Image (cartoon, rainbow, N blue to C red; front, side, top):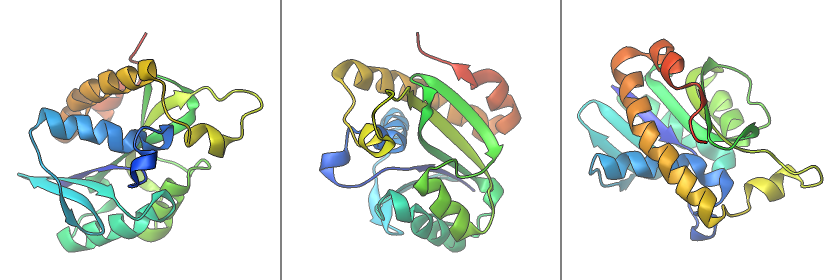
Length: 185
């Protein structure tokens, strides 16, 4: 089994913020695959075949709580998950797949690392930057996307359908070779 995990905050007021990019991308994948979510694992959850989908309702800073609950229940290893989340240091429209890394200032990733006990897990950073010079990062990531940016996020979600399919079938290296870099003009 493999798990696709999107990070975000569950309240409606956060629905279209940059920090909810993980939720927004996974929502597009779910729509494409006609998958409906239910409440389980302190999350919005779905299972289709051998693929699990998780959108933690624990809020960003406690994402690891829901992730470890899912991993323990399905006996998943750290190599069985792909975490999708926003990265304000990467330009808008750029995907960056990695096998491991530090939390890079992202509290959702920090929570997952602390909960599962390792920084080694596949992750898809979705570029939502650049940040303006005098804008605090918290204000930037909690700000709503513009309508034009939201359309770009939807396009990224459609690309992510193929990216996730590639990751599931061929592994991270092939997905990195095919999808890392700029995906939107």
